[in-house]
Length: 297
Image (cartoon, rainbow, N blue to C red):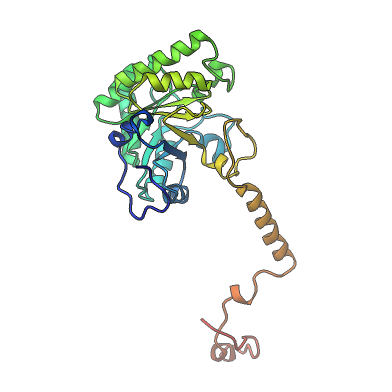
């Protein structure tokens, strides 16, 4: 059964539990959202999401970079630990950043282990067949792996930008083949990013592990969005595939503007935000009449 924000006490979700959540088998659709700190983790978990992705998208939406290539394993471990400290019931998935799984199997496993030690219950990496050896190495180390195909943001330079993938018949067939290979290598779920919905349906039907769509239409076994997109915090980029459920960026600017105005006109802090001496101490210090007679601390 699916989880909701009303669940009183959810059991922690694990990769094997997620692996069995295929819609074709009668399961509810999976919900994944990114988070990068403890408050975001608490909010996402209270909402009843199934998985929290500590995404390398933090490079763009938290750290201010123009792409995801700047974050390191140390950055990802730092933010994964912050998310994990909130002790969510949702499965925490740590993103392996660019060049952390591209060199050799031993280094890849060490980097995956760093995210697990930080609190991740699984790791995610991008790429299809060329990453199979790394997927197998991580799985052999008994660390659950989530795959990611279609638009792979870490490959933005070679792809020539953030472009929809799989629009040709050849490209569609390659995506289906890559998904099958990832599932066979041991991936417990696969993210499908920015591909036509018909192709996402083909992939979803072809594998026995859940697919998680982001810009891949409604036929996946689940969906993921970036926290800052859902809440309307990120203003620089507004992907076609995202949907805003709040405008917290505008609300934050408005609140801070009102705070600044109150400070400048002397309206903040007021009596209710101010501490006072007792009348006796004020009198001892020669501050006659300085301390109000209202409540003290």
